[in-house]
Length: 243
Length: 76
Image (cartoon, rainbow over the protein chains, first blue to last red):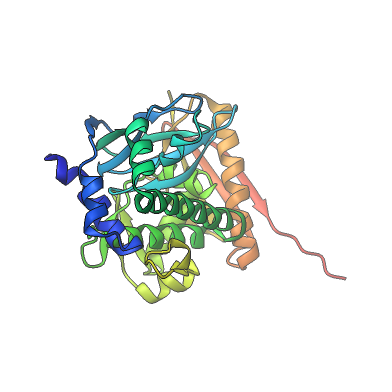
């Protein structure tokens, strides 16, 4: 993968969500980046580790999660190309959760030193990345609401619609279908339910003609019903500079 | 590790578990069945879609245990 392709999804996303200028995009395009390929379900940076660089997803899906002593894992967020899921490690030096791949992934590593000097040189880029971590926090708020208050079918619907809206921004949806490469167990971990309950919810949504999830791919059967079930209001994604 | 399948019955309607999952032992399978039953019952009871949830567990294809949760509301 060419190094400008590594940054393509990031620039594409920043153009829409933050209205990045060509000049600032050029600065990001000039960042030195170390490309590494990861297999599926491999840790990128672990809870307790000291990170020295931030990782930009070029291809594939990642997830952030936290595991409690009894072995139960909560998936905190799903990440797609163009996102830098450990951007906060620039300021929060020791990881307080895990970042790992869900699928085989191409990741670009940008050193903290490089990012720090870019931030000092270019406040526009610094603000944009700051905004990115704030949107991250907004998404966590929505996930807390999701897991804490919605019934399981609505939780799944909400996670699906959110993922679709984010994939849309980088041009990775295909009509009514898009990738959501999570196993039943991982869906359970994202929704705070068991794999058995996740299976039941997936089947229910298919039986009701709302959405189909098969081998990591979502096909929306009835968009109106899906949005209604998800109780989705996309403002929290702040996908425009005016939001 | 043994493979356990958890079929879910709600008001007699069955949602089969085709894939199943590998778990260390029967104790883990028992816990998974109780947690799943309770979590499904919470949704089903609150939405009113069912008053009974049964999780029927098979171990390597053979019947292992059934967890049954029933909603009873006594109004005076």
